[in-house]
Length: 409
Image (cartoon, rainbow, N blue to C red; front, side):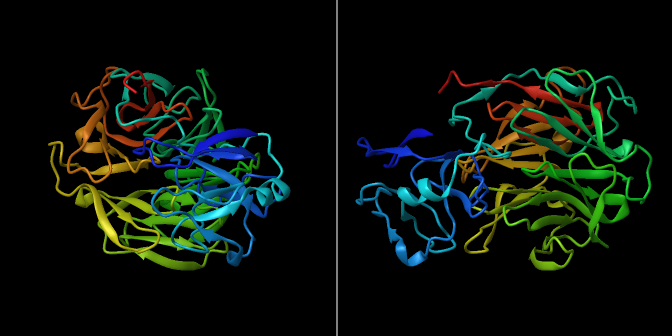
């Protein structure tokens, strides 16, 4: 694939234009799989938010040199400035010839968690949502949901929902009026084909589903098309889940008040952060920093990947003002560091730009209700590859889609 990158900062008037004749991975996590060669991964380009180059992971660190610090450019021909934190904290110049030779192009190089949506700081979303799943009252039919909680959107805009009180995971294709059950049989239980009040899901590039089976106190893994799941973590009180490119599993334990990183065999790698009060959802950004909704403290916290420092990035006190949150649950972070929050008890979705001291309402905020411009205890949110916003409208038993408006950009 041929693509062009600007090698200068966006606030510079002059740019060095680099022609990249290799695979580009848009919106992928750092080191995310991007090629038929499993020894290749996505390297984030230092000067271009949201895009990366698919390159060989096992190149010796000694073969890499630092970028020109001020502008993140490489003086060597056929090199590009990328982040490679396994080698160095600062960006390095990667030889594109290695990437071309070792990393064959895949049919679709986009990430499931793509955020390369050309979202500038001025975009807005339609104030009125359209129902794309559920919305036919509380119930267990395939066109209904029953207090849905967690949400996942893939690159085809297929919606995956933790349909909690129906004890199942459902899949809704674009423009369909009914969903399909892909995990659980709808009856609460702890057999391998059952779930009990599942809260959140994550789906990897192979279609494997990871589920927080909350009332069973376990994490279930379901391979695509299987009728039964496998327990990979147990004796836990899980809510939110996300899986990184090394297949480590991050899970919030709401009763212990901590976020734990697990190996696939069910052993603990490390406790990332503790002393939280009912942590709910978790998000991993492109730099591997972690964001957690510290729900009862009405805050969103960030754990920095490199320094391990913990900071508050949204909220801090409970209330309905623009500098406050009330029982926040879902959280999403784009490539610019903007934090999006399901501000549950305020019945709204908030947008907090990087280092802001207050947020903006981008959906809801009209009081609790079921009108197209209202939400009722929203629990989670996500975005598709176009930048459209999806909200789990928990109390209305539906998922709402808010269309992005890029005209201000």
